[in-house]
Length: 150
Image 1 (tube, rainbow, N blue to C red):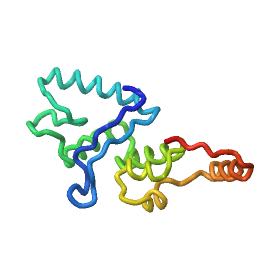
Image 2 (image 1 turned 120 degrees about the vertical axis):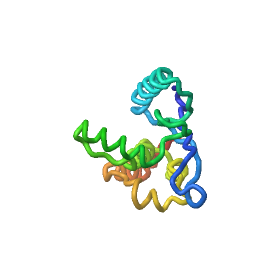
Image 3 (image 1 turned 180 degrees about the vertical axis):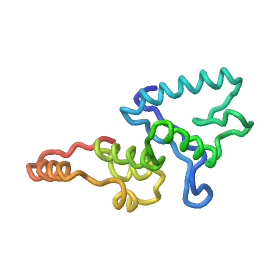
């Protein structure tokens, strides 16, 4: 994986209405985990004789990708095994928050998350920690350029 690694999201919730296919950037801190998963995935698929481009391919059926119900059952088994409850949306939200926190403009974060407008980000995800707000205000007050990454 390089500096411009992305995940292509092909099957999205709300497809055909409000959902849209998109490429999502892989943020720092996730690359190592993702590389380990992809290596494990490739070995497992090779062992089973399965060819698939899906991030989470079904291992027993001939389908192209794992259905939501099957993925939910897998999630439940993992939660019981790890004794941890988690929500998939939390990863989506954390990714958006991290992009925002490192200085990416809100419009870019919003688009990469599949939102049509920035209002969703403003309301739910892009919550500036108070310290960051004050730092940016004082930078502007002191005529220092506010650095934003694009």
